[in-house]
Length: 599
Image (cartoon, rainbow, N blue to C red; front, side, top):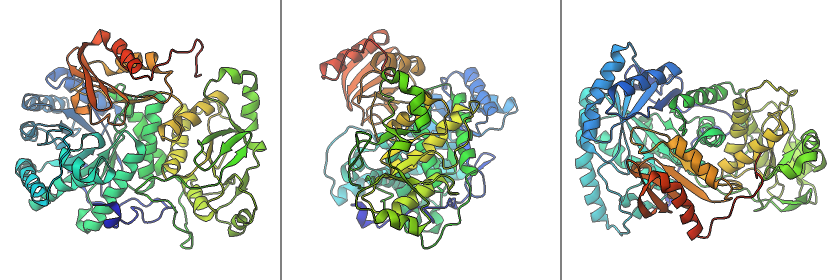
C-alpha cells in the first residue's frame, strides 16, 4: 500500500497557528490524559523490578521530581507479579502517582501486570510476535491468518483491561516492527502506523477505548512523519478515533545531544497541536528528564498567539515525507550554500570578532558566514510587496525573516518559504526578538529555543543556513548551532550516538558505558553507534546504526554491524576495545587527533 493511496490530510488545522488536537480523555489512575487536561509529563524508573524497596524509592523520587505518571518494566510474569508489592509500597507511602507496566514479548506478563497497575504499555512489534528479520511475501489469505492469530493473542488483554477499567498504550517503536509489517509496509512511518492500527481495531472490536498511542523513533524526522501520519489516519477513520497521543524520541542519548534531539521531535509535534503526554528519554538519572519535559511544555504553552490570514498560502512541504526545499546554489563568504549543499552556520559580526583569535582551536565549530557581510535580505513574510521585491531579483539571494516580526519563529519561516520563490535559500534564526546579552540566562532555555526554532523547520526541509543569537557565549552559540543540525540529521559532523535510557531490563550501567564509548569513539565523524541495554532495544531499534553495543546477558555484551549480531558474550570489561576492533575491521576507524576537535 503506497502512501498516496490513503490520501491523508495534513494533521493540523492551521500550519501557522497552534491549535491543539481535540481528543477524548483517558484516565490513568487519577490522572487524565487528553481532553481538557494539560500535557502530562512522565518518566520510567531504572531499578530491577524484582527489587521492591529500590523500585518503590525510585517511583517516589520520580513523583517528587514532578513525574505525573511513572512506568516500570515487567519483562516476565515473575517481574509483573512483583508490581503488586511495588504499587502497595508506593500507596502506603501516601503517593497516588499512576503506575504503568511496560511489556515486551510476554502476553502472560501483561495479563499479570494489569491486575496491579493503572495502565499497560504494549509494543505491537513484539507482543505475540517474534522478530526474525525474515523476508517473506504474504498472500492476502496468509496475512489474514496472521491477523487472526494476533487477535487471539491480544484479545484476552483487551478484555481484562476493559473488565478492570485499566488504560492501555499501543506504543509502536520504529526499530521493532514485526516481520509481518516489515514485509508488507517496510521500515517506514506507514508501517509504524499500520502496526498500531491492527491492535486498535482488535481493541475496538471489543468496544474498548481507553487507548493512548505512540510512534517512537530515534530519528526525529521519522518520528515526526509517523506521528503526523498516525493523526491523519485516526482522523480519517472517524471522529470517535480521537485517542490521546504520547510523544517521545526513543534512544535520544544524553547531555546536550539528547535534549536537542528530544526537543526537535517532541517540540515539532506539540507545535502541530499533537501530543497529550510526553517523555524525554535520556541516558541519565530518570529525575533529570523531568525539568526538560516541563521546560519544553512551558515554552510551547507560552508561544504568542497568531492571527493567521486565510489568504496565506499553505506550506509547500509534504508533512508525511521529508524532502528538502529546492533552491539554487550560491556562494556566500566562500562557501557554497543552498541546493543540496550542507546547511551552513552563520554568526553575527560580534561573535566572529570575539572568536577570530582562536578559530584554529574551534575544530568543527567554525563560523562559516558573517551575517552582516553575507548580503542577507530581511523581509516580513506578511508583506506581499517586500516578498515581490525579492522575487524580482535576477540572482538568488539569501533571505531571512526581519527582526521584530511578531510571529512565532516556525510560523514566520513557514510563511516565508511558502511565499518565496524556491530559487532563494533561507537563513533561519532562533529568535526574531533579539535582546541584550544575558549571561545569566539558563543554557537549557537557549538550547530549547534553538531546537524548537530550527528543528521543526529543518524536519520540513526548510533552511539552508542557521544562526543562533539566543546564547550569549560565542563558542557555545556555535556549538549549539552545529549540534542542532546534527540532531536534526541535517549535517553530520561528528559521531552520532543512539543510546537508550536505562530501565529494569538493562544489563549494564548505561551511563558509565555510554561515557566510555564516547571517550573512545567521539572523533569518528559520520559513524553512528548504538548503545542498547538489552535485546528489547537491540537490533531493531538500532537498525540505522553502523555498529551496536548491546547487553546480551549480565556482564556480557553482543556487538552488531547494522542489525546483525557478529560478536557474542564478550566480557563487559573487554567490550569497548572489541567494539573499536570491529570498527577498525570495517574500515571506519581513524586514530584520534593529538589535539581536541571540539570545544
